[in-house]
Length: 79
Image 1 (spheres, rainbow, N blue to C red):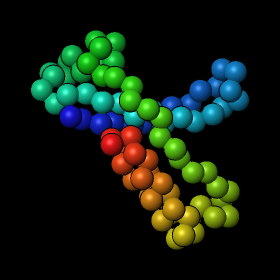
Image 2 (spheres, helix red, strand yellow):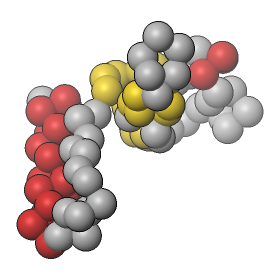
Image 3 (cartoon, helix red, strand yellow):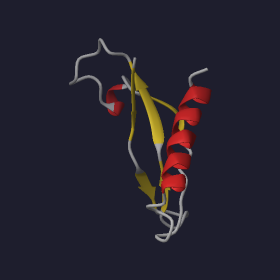
Image 4 (cartoon, one colour):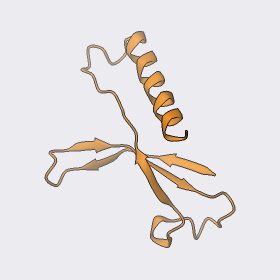
């Protein structure tokens, strides 16, 4: 099983919101077939990503929180 995520910006009717979709694919599918339009990739969920101001972006506690949020989100999704 291969999981992948990438930031996606949605500007139509949302005002430049960023989403982080989590996709799943099986590992034994050839690369040329693994594209979403070939139905070899399925959307599993959207990941929760914490936002902050520039003031706290490099704060060690915020970075730790972001990592914990990411890992706990994945854990809950994959239960």
